[in-house]
Length: 103
Image 1 (cartoon, rainbow, N blue to C red):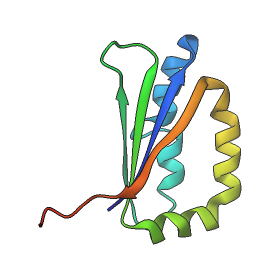
Image 2 (image 1 turned 45 degrees about the horizontal axis):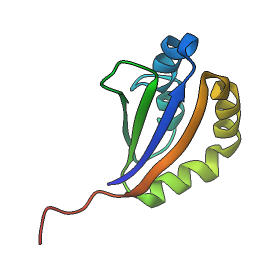
Image 3 (image 1 turned 180 degrees about the horizontal axis):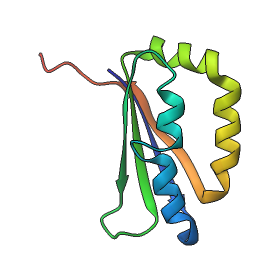
């Protein structure tokens, strides 16, 4: 499993729209579903119930992610630009694979 984890600081007035766009059934998930190998998105909010969020996007493997991005790059960029005003800061935390449970 390949994961992409991002951290966001959200403008207080935009929290509700952000949750709708970045959640498991939001705008990003709908776009990602166009890709073969997309395995879901999770949205986490900081324990203080403030404006800090994490997203975890799961893909079958890195190849599935890159194939999606190659095919949907313009739609990805357009959605990113549309939703950018919702956040005051965003940064990638991790792109990588989920380790096996073995030794």
